[in-house]
Image 1: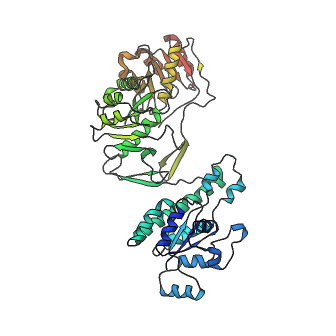
Image 2: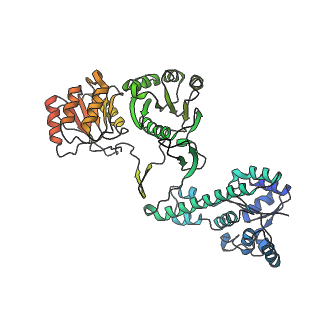
Image 3: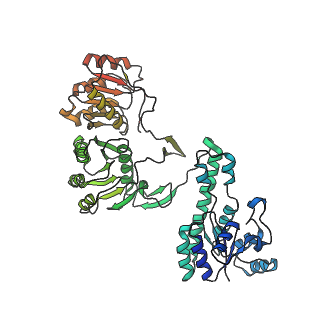
Length: 499
């Protein structure tokens, strides 16, 4: 008769699984609380204490840490090991069902104490997982209740094959790795940080066809960016980068907004009361660059806007939802990828970038700190409408590659320049894209002006107000230029580089 050991904290699906094992002729051995639940449901079970001949001790801290248990799990399928167990009066254990104390959930509680957290560090469970996973050539490990049905189905047919046992073992090792990392990070505080990544999908290639690529997630089984692909071709490496850039930009605005991104930089951002108007104004910012781009909405996409977007070739659309009408319209575009996001959150609020032999980590730039105070530094102050436009331009500027320059008017970008080695070139680029629309518009710069030439180029284009961090040794030259040209200028004291 095959034997199964059950010792679980999360008892989801336990009774049904154990009943299925019993019907298949398995002998069940279980630790205290697990055995109690099985008895309450009239499922025959032997308690670990009776199985080992040793009582649970130290208030239940030591239950399964016994050679009768671990010998039964770790024994190989050899005559020598079988004879040794027989002499000791022990048995082979063929199936281990175990999950761990909720350490992660415990430390997430705002009032958790160190003592309470330490009590949720599982010892026996981790040991059982590692033992069963190590001996997966013979032993089946089940450490996730979501696997109960698949394991039962396998047992009812031809049995759990070695490949499936290996997959379950890998899941076990990943679980204990994550568990130990959480404990180390919690106890180590800022001195300790473990990055746990789960492979989600192999991509066709990376930025270029000769580069291999794969996407990983912070949670096993999650979709790209934590969202759900509703239709379209497989997402590429570049698609994912652009989707992330577009999504980060659009969710930074509270009002109904649209962002269009091409090659990791916004080419149009707009906010409006009506979604269609926001989209059309974002598109008008740079319709040439928008071709083949990514469009992001921070409201569920409606049919009217979907119809308008469908007139342009775009690679992907990302939104927190899609109306039935929008899906019907876009279904005609078979290759168009639609990514539905679960919420408007940016998670995690840290960023990582690989460098040679290392990794950089920083907190996400979520905008100006609460303590930020804008300061008018010119003789002329911006009008209320100009101030509103400056606030929009400043937020939009934070998502453009440095040296970032944004021309805006009426909560919409009209010209964007960025990604150049010098700032004045970016001003020229923004001015060229804005054309006549720059007359009476405002400008945002993600960092200070090292010289007054950027102010002079902006004035020549028609800019009437500027927002920038300030902080240059030549700030006064830029201030003097603004005063001479009749431009209002605000210093924020906050820089927003995006490399």
